[in-house]
Image 1 (cartoon, rainbow, N blue to C red):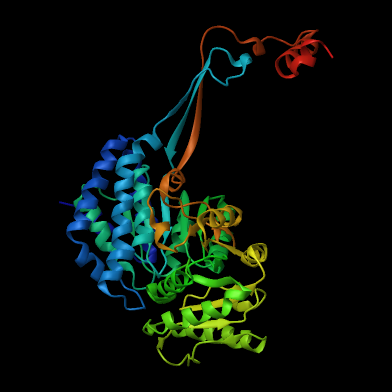
Image 2: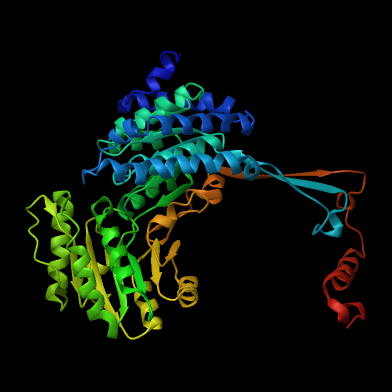
Length: 478
């Protein structure tokens, strides 16, 4: 049974309590960090099984403004969460194990020195959660931080506390030691108080504006961060692509979570001679997507950006929409240009654009014409699509699909440019929850660097450099 201290960790805290909560977490982390990784992973395994048994109840607690169907929440939030747990169970021990270095590659002048690289826990990690996937995204980050030996303070999004409190309760039931998880309040002031009280890393999923604001606060204390920020993803359609597959995929991307996905399809880049056909197929598929609830602020943003694009020469291919209406059907803007603000923005609504180009080189230029670099998709013959994918300056690329393959727990997720830096998920995400420490051990009595400098040292060093690194000309003294 949890004691009073651990019960308090499962209740949303007022701002005044944040510093005390973090002190409790830090005290608990000191013991947790020295637990064998296997012991930590036993908690992860028990958690996975508990989540699976209570999946429907847990999904029902997840609040989204789009009013998701239960099946979508189970698929988009719960399945990736338990998959991430299973990945850690199988891989975390090896990833976190000390890496011992042998003699191979060691400079000769370090003969007698053995070395290893350890992965130390950071301490207390602050997870700032987003509103679009309020359980899966922070949940994976929390579990990776715990597996690496950290304590976690999590700031839920508005109306996101209930699901994260339930996840914390399941961790408690799985045997996580008291105090290691602290669920803070939902307000911005809670995150600010946590940063002011002192954390060892911040993992933020949110907008670029929020990322900048948080980074300004972290810079003063030189606190590291992982920034998983927004995107404006391109979908590159190559000659020979299955246009019906493209249309179905885009419709899925706009239907999923009412378009409020950071890697939703925003800019469809298609060869000019295929644009009309793809537009017709898109309109047919989008007509099958029911209107979804979108916040008023986002509807107004979308309406303003779409209106501006039309005034600049784009064409609204779908029926006009009224931002005053709560439900929003998918919106397709054709004849768009990459310089339009609509294509440079992160719009968390079912809105996409169609850009016609001459060829694949032009498509790459369009994909790179913007500040974001989170993800992209390429549709077309496999070899050609893979060649384009290799050249895209983004964090994740899917070929002949979109969104779903990025949930593979073996893969890292992160962006470039305004889409942030660092990685969550996969091996890279786990290691981001640690800091490397190198340990070198000198054996024997050979320590020539300790003697005073002597005449002839420079000549000796120069001769060694010539012999060791100068190639055959160095051996001949040339």
